[in-house]
Structure formats: structure tokens, C-alpha cells
Amino acid sequence: MKQNFTVRQGALDGVEAFLSVAQHRSFRRAAAELGVTPSAISQAVRALEARVGAVLFLRTTRSVGLTEAGERFFARARPAFEELVAASGAARDLGQRPAGLLRLTVPRSVVPILLEPLVASFCQAFPEIEVELAASEELVDLAAGGFDAGIRMGQFISPDMVAVRLTKPLPFLIVGSPAYLERRGRPRRPDDLREHACLRLRRSNGALAPWSLNDGGRSIEIAVAGPFIANDFPTMLGAAVEGVGLAQVPGPLATDAVRTGKLVAVLEKFAPMTPGVFLYYPSHRQIMPKLRAFIDHVKGRSRAAR
Image (cartoon, rainbow, N blue to C red):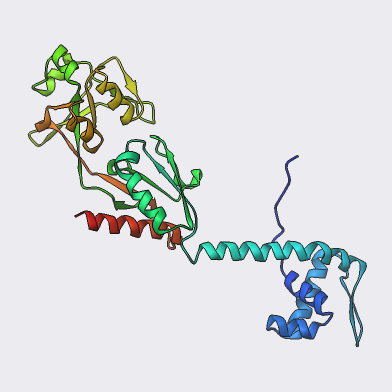
């Protein structure tokens, strides 16, 4: 059964005053504890009694006692109010120092080439922060998904986000295995790709991404065809290593495979440049310390790498 957690506006007003009076059995001592006047305490309690619909205190010129309704209210309100105070303290703690769970949404291709060393050094520097990486090619709504920030190629980031550069602009390389190139030949011009088995990327919106190239400073797109479709670059890269066809992937992702001879770059002079990889997050007036610590760590690593 679904519970209704709606709290009437003003329902908590006067509760702290009531609890203090109930504990001290005195309006004057409660006023001193809360730093207000006795008349202010009396007004708050009267307003609370009016909202509750019952008299909570028995008052005489010499003493203050609880009615049966007041006893019941006190028994349930005190632990609830203490929980609210504790919750406020816990939230305030996270707002004042780098601690808690930092959730990031990232594409799979970014994890091995960028995030593994970055996260390792960050976790060592900030042991009170837990880092959770959700690897997905989808362009996730940060707020709806409960993420503090995301990491994406710059061209996919909404302009209403704050973006922090993580890498320099990156080339998109076309690569193939030596066995594939021996079997099918090496393309020399962009039009040659129409005769090749080209591995394709399906975007999060369901569309197949065309291949982009730079022809003498002019950006061109080619609708390629091939036997294999994936929704992330690492999977495409693995298929290229196995000789399934040519793949167009971010340069850093293919670096090791090219260096070890598992893949060969082709049409390199036509490789387009992308804006690079960025950390992005909503434009808030106040950034939680855990995210601020991560942003500063990223910037520090970027400066050190120059």
C-alpha cells in the first residue's frame, strides 16, 4: 500500500518549542534554550495546539504539565524530530567537506584510456569519497538518473551544462587488422570505403552514425556499410582486431592496438578532429564538495600532463 508522505504546510512549526517546553516543563527555560522570548514560545505552542486540534499542556501559575494528548504527541514527535535534526546534520556534513558517493555516467571507451588512472589517484587523495561509474553510451539525464556529473565527447554535451576539458581535441582514426587489409586492400581515398566492410555505431537514439572525414578542411560524411553494428567503440575495436572490417574510433582507444601491430591506421590524412572529452555537470550556484574536489583533481592532472 502506497503511503502518502505529504506534510501540511506549517505542520512542523512550533514542534521544537513544544519539545523544549515538554522537556523542561517550563516556558521560560524553553525560551532561554531556544534564544527567544517566553511570549514567542507561548504563541508557537498555541498555534501548534490549534493545528493539532487538542490542548497539549496543562498550565498553572506554578507548573506546566502534559495532557494525555500532549504525552502521545511528545512520545512520537520527539524521536521524529531527533531524526530530522540528524538528517539535517548529515546533509550539512556533505555540504561542507568532500565525502559521500560521487556518481558519474561515462561511455565505456573513456574508462580504460582516461578514467582508470584518474579515478585511482582521486580515490587515494579523497578516501572519504566513493566513486561509482555507470558505463553507458546513452546520453543520460543527470538529474533524473541521480548522477553528479557525466563524461562525454564535447559535441554531445548540451550547451546548458558546465563543461571541463579532460583531453585535447582527438582524432577519429580508421583502423583495420593486417589480415583484413591483406585480404581486401588498403583504402586510398574516402570513396574507397564504399567497397569495404565498415563496422558501424548505433547511437543511443537508434540511428546509425555515418563516418565523418576531413577532406582538405572540408567536413564530409559517408554512409558506409558492413557486416557488424555495435553501440560502443570498444566492441567495434575488438571486431576490427579480429578482422571483421574497418572501424572508425577515437584515436587514444586504438593507440595500443596500432603500436603492437594488431591494427593499422588508414586514411590518416582524412582523420577528423573531435572537440575532445569533457566532464560536464548542471549549472548550479553551489557545487557539492565531492564534485568540486573531483573537478579540481581533474584540472590539476590536466595541468601536470601539459
